[in-house]
Image (cartoon, rainbow, N blue to C red; front, top):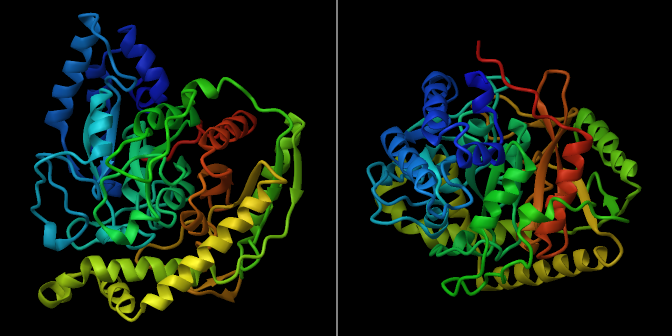
Length: 471
């Protein structure tokens, strides 16, 4: 097996190879480090590599195998952590100049769980300041580039994570998603990412801005790898009162079963989307009807969400103002202007505004509860455009129509409001050679079904043989 093939192996295959010592974790890790040293200067996905630590962790993983010790599900698997998540003894900047030299004392809960499962930590991946936008750049590390066309954005805020996975710089990446931050970069970079159900992955989050919206989750190239990673990340924990109970069946085992008689409803606008790239529209329609090969039913549905973004923005921006207003007096001139604007906007919301937003959120949840009484799965595009130019926060127009700053990403944030599990899976390519993503949404707490439907589509329309060219 050549070095590039090792870099693009699935984590499940790596785990088997390490367990059988057909390949050691040290060999795999060194091969991926070599690739990072070659590719990362081009796309800037990793902001803080931890290669010496990775080598130590790989050596320890191989020793556990050789000694016949009990090993974790992710023993020896190279993995990256988003720079929004604290890592003990390793710089964690949150993409913010204020924390440029911040070194936490301990690991965040999700990081600890992954390390306990045996991962090899390759480093931290780039993110915008406190994950506040859906492109990836900051004043410390600069911008991350899309692996497929280097003058395009990888999306955000887990842009570094998705770009790394797409480029073969590690099979597993931890991301987080408060409005689409796993699904959007997964879509634009041509990989698979899932935002679990709200409460599926426990969190010690002490920020009100994202606590009711965000979830940690996997970004990978193979659906089975997401299941494997989620088996570690998920689980009830008393430190988080919102966490869901453990699933009865491991997700990786659930993928062995193909569900029957699935009813899929799909929407191209959710009742409010103003513009959609025609290539994306055609790709989604073509892709969703591929499920009929499994004797599943497919039907276009009408969903009418009203003021979804207004409710989302009220909850998020009021939270950002509460969490970060304290930095404005001293640091405003050095903070990202778009982040400052969001904080200042949030200061204008009242308690009544928040209550109205929460009431609307209840109505949205009830709408989808009613939808899932008649359908098993909802499918939409992940984004309304493919990857656009670096240096832009958003495209001004789609198909010649002027759009708002969030007009290109209207499909993801509703499911942060409602807490439903939602994944983005590659489903096609534009004429320029950019990935197109399809969003798969499941009933509340039914992450298993989203993974199973994702796996079924992956088998119908695999994409993993496509690799970015860095020659």
